[in-house]
Image (cartoon, rainbow, N blue to C red):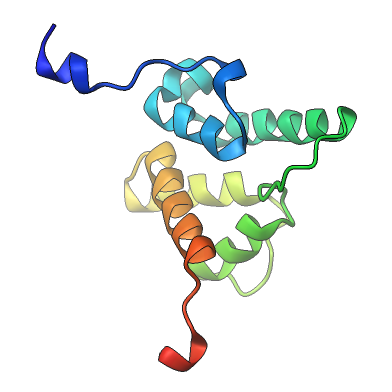
Length: 128
């Protein structure tokens, strides 16, 4: 076994995952396995199903990825939009990715990392 193979994290099954962020970490590692053609719209559909399952099963988990959720609210100004998009975050990130020549999944991953960093470590407004 090569060093690269040793350092690669083992595949986790859905039953090994504990929240939506762990799921998104798996998607990032193997996007073509989880999301058809790297489409963020397909990813959004998968996340919508995740949110519905949380509700059906009465699971109390914070879910940030609805079109009016915390991720979308954070995203609009980040994409230079002064109001929410009726098209949703997946379409708007795909549009921004196309304009910048970046794969949509790559841009989503970058934005997700920034969102998580700001959410987990908010800056003090007085420090600016």
